[in-house]
Image 1: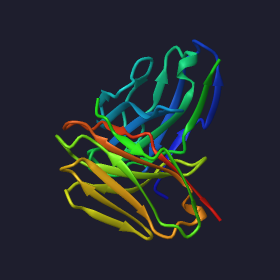
Image 2: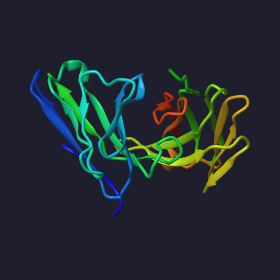
Image 3: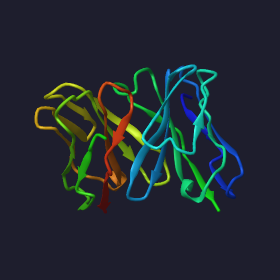
Length: 114
Length: 112
């Protein structure tokens, strides 16, 4: 089944404790992206990647890192999480250019930073 | 930052009603317009990606139109059903880059 998977789905952590949210897709998509969803602010793009070893900042990259060492995986790293990073996170992928191709979203990761 | 706006923010209709809502975006430097449907506790799913002025797309009872000259897209739902209850998001890429800017969404609730 074609899908985007994220792990973990739920995470409660404490300020400053490094964490990684994994994202994997099995559709051989070139484009992958991370978004955060906050009430009243809509979906905002954190980082995106056009292909392996190619990543770019989105609207809200501060406090996050990403890497794209393999085509299928695009982990989101929070080196020192803070309470303002409490949010619902979505990973998405698309066939190639994100602007012209529909995006397939993962199930979401709800992160709480205490 | 690209300004993508949706109206109304929320909408309550009765089962069987037809409804429509709007996505507005800057008409200059247009590249594409995406529509997604987002059900509670699930993830957004693509409905349409539209690129040409005058485009009309249809999927079952849902259809969308695009006017790039005036900067808007309409999403129509014919004969709304309770299972249509969801938040409908539109998004547009800014400039020639691959960043998508999403609107705030229209939350549709269909009462049986």
